[in-house]
Length: 326
Ligand code: ADP
Ligand code: TRP
Image (cartoon, rainbow, N blue to C red; front, side, top):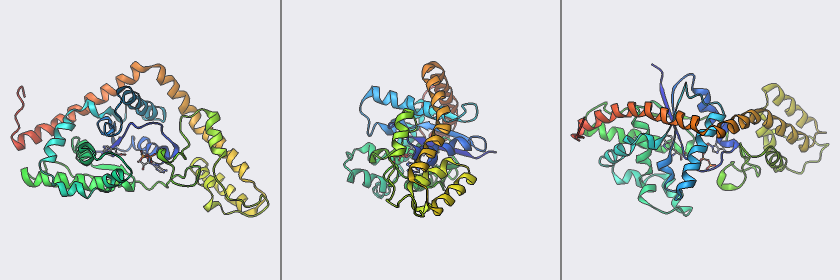
């Protein structure tokens, strides 16, 4: 049996190259090897988005983005969290066996509150909802960046508490699949992030994308001098797009001297366009075919819900919850 891999994306605005290389491209690559569950975490987003039209639009954007970069709905389940309402039911049940102390130790909650986000119950209980997303389909693996590992460990803990109370093996304990992708730097050299204003968006206009690439921060080594590729933000991006052979050639040119940063930036802009241009075209076509995208999402939701219902039957029956008509 293929392993079940699950990933959730919050619908929170425009994607950037960090999201693509650090997460989405790997999810797309995994669709042949794993049974892949890719969902849009719209209930999670209610912690930050309080405008209905914005949430609807951002939710659709995640689906468009994934389909544009190559997610194949014949291979992977693409769905909205809200199309599997059992997730919220399981969230409640998990919260009845989970100690408040576990959630108080969540680093991401503390970080978000420290950065000014409202300390709502939704934000505090966010890891329980995330655990339900994962446990509701018996996921084996959850690909995450380092910042999310704690949430996956908490998920395994919550499954363990539930199994401890109601019976071994009722919920499958998942493992984090740590992402070994490099951190993609933004145009200022810090980690690319939508909140730092340093991102190169995936689906910006070609003109703006080029402008952003040409404005990547570099040091002031004169053109004729030898340069170190491994401390250069432009090179860090180049290597994501270019073949290993081309990357090696540029490294030689850096070291030899006589190369200006403008040259390598131009090449990054070209390579960006070669990769992203076809994605952009695909996305533009999908935008015109809203009914097709909606069909994919509702069909994905229907299939995943059937899986979730099996787990929920198991859970309800173990804890004595009766739902009429079943
Ligand atoms: P942001 O920092 O822009 O808010 P998110 O936290 O929403 O991005 O990240 C979504 C996914 O993209 C995560 O899996 C994260 O690991 C990945 N990701 C985000 N930024 C980068 C980056 N600069 N380099 C590599 N991966 C990234
Ligand atoms: N917490 C994740 C993030 O902020 C999104 C998410 C929600 C998720 N549920 C999940 C990720 C389940 C993996 C598995 O990026």
